[in-house]
Image (cartoon, rainbow, N blue to C red; front, top):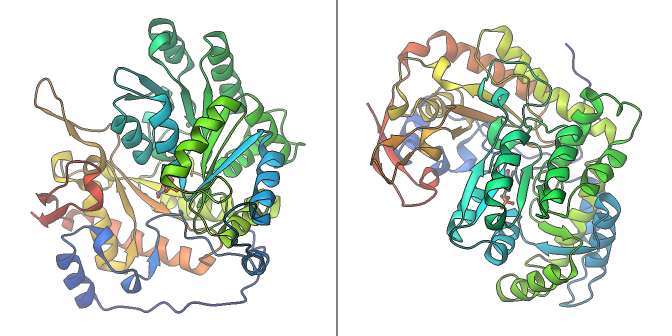
Length: 456
Ligand code: F0G
């Protein structure tokens, strides 16, 4: 087994209950075949998300006890500020309670109708926040990202030729260029330093601010170290400093590589923009020394950010994800290759080719994984992304129909991951029995969270 053992030992355990198939069958019906509607206590291995689901370390728990709940001037804010400055090099640090509030703040100031925000691939809340402010979210992934079976070290990259074109034609309408590291919606794939440098060069030439969506930047930097020439002897922290140095700012959901259950921030160098963000922050989140978080949460984030760049941790982390990917791949399950940093993505169109995109093949797999094995995964396909073309009225389907198995950080053991692999292989062997779905209720935006369906 090519798997480094966990670089930690377990001090506290949380019981998980097993369920019968009958119970799971009932819960699926009650939830309208939407996995978001299943109570977590009835899930055996929860791979819905790696966001906010990390296990805190003893060091973070100790930090929680040192929470200073002062409205202004909390020592935990100063600790967080210094930690972020040290990791990123940005001057200004504005805490928010999670990533999407940072997006909301930034885009409500920078975006307006007619504007365009290019990104390698927008995450769903990022896209929704761009749109909610009247602007257009433009995805510019490299062509390699659209071929799930293709092995390529940096499938998260942005198509810089296309970016150059857009900047040349639309410069006046582009308030910022973003890049998501790692590229969550395109398989958790990393972006190379070379690509970030090239984006930065273009942004500087056209004088457009360049921001990173850095939710999983530590995993991205670890991949740069592993895969990009010239970085083997650099520390992850040094790589991160270099990466941030090419940009003007970042927003981060600290629920991922902050190893925290809640938290986020915006980091940037532009004083005037920082002041505008802080004014708006007071309106929607709170004073700039806590940004919607308790002092103890600020402390957990500050400590988690440092633990997340530890190389023993990152080696184990990426190897655990790769172990799941390799086990599935060996059994013939079609997955996005190579393994991402935080998740394994199953290519549902090839897993269940008998289900057309209009019947949500990826969602159908999430139902099968829960029904058969109590595993919760998430759809990243038509339920999340298909939309009506406003001009033709026809449905536009996404290029990829994926199921994400996102692995919480420091939570599950190798044996849990092994159980997941074995269960999915078993389902794969009888895949022709999986049934498609039809929607019976949907909300106007972000419908995948609350849609109700029935099996066909
Ligand atoms: N950006 C990226 C790349 C994300 O993956 C997420 C969240 C956000 C921004 C928003 O951050 O949740 O703190 O408000 N991703 C989670 C996921 C929800 O499951 O991938 P948030």
